[in-house]
Image (cartoon, rainbow, N blue to C red):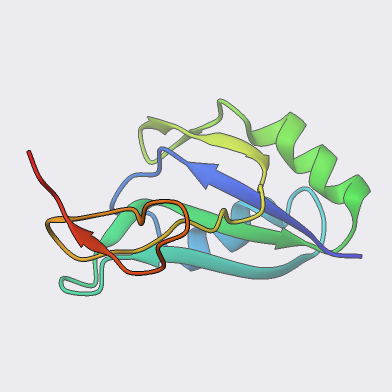
Length: 107
């Protein structure tokens, strides 16, 4: 069972290949997803690394949490599931209970 890890506080110069090489020291890396800005295609400073099994994931957290990579102290932890949040446009608020339409904000 693959385990997904969150890797934060990355340098904008860190690459997927660099992360793959680092985390392969802890075990088999299934995938590396360096999160990038859509407009500029530059790193947002965090990534997700999938390790092949829970034992290797625990080893990676122990080895690399607070590890210095590209002159930055990175943070490594188990990734949490994504939370569903309502998405609205600018100037809109959450619907009132019983009302399924979005209402303009009134300040």
